[in-house]
Length: 371
Ligand SMILES: [Zn+2]
Image (tube, helix red, strand yellow):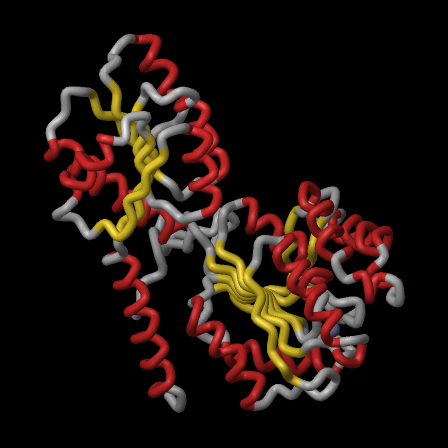
């Protein structure tokens, strides 16, 4: 009860974010060899809150646009050359984007081809403006709901540059492969371990290799406390990105900064449904994990991210590849994986697929209810 004021604020902030997502404007890409169709689509979509309607004349141009920008829906005219491979590529690499095909061809062979592309919607010509708008609205809202239910927002917190990569670089790479949103918060720039400018560049490179956005704090290395300053730094990022999953240091650690970050995270992330603690090279034998993330397919990505810290890999045996791999191999045996990252669970309300548990624990509930 003592924290009711603060909790209320947090809940209001979270609710307003949910509202924003629901009212989110649409970002649509139209792929058609005839540019005149852009005008037609723009006209048809006028009553909708489309913030972005972009156009590509070829599959290659569309592919580059989808890789560079965020879209909710890609509408592809079936006559575009390589349109089928574009549709498959979008489903393989951008799981949150819906695809809609417009075609005049209703032959069985066309249907077979288009079904293989796992499209979300199909419209046949001739089509009316109403049909088109109805499909766009339907698919855009379906994709928004799917993203909200399934996309995790992950925040990994470390005291120093390289802590996150060593502790949970594999899990982060796995989140990235699943299309989750990733942020890394590093609270100090690691002055005690080398030149801060070098370490900052290394941290940025490592984060970009993992597909994560980096937040760098300026707390003083080896002097980090679990007090207000640290809590507020973490809270600022938590409020900004509303994480569903937080990874942080464990308290079973001989480094005072790591223990302080652990304690501060538990306060700042008190409203986050899933909180895990990772192992550091300075963790003690009291670190007893309950969760083992299979990183067999992500060890390469983890090693690459750690390699970005050239200034450290030369001076710390803990960062050597064989050390990282053999540690993962050791923990793998506890869960039947070849390579695993161990995590201590502070709180977990998701099942393995990331869906919230329902009352029967079957994981069918769409989203955690906002109380
Ligand atoms: Zn550290």
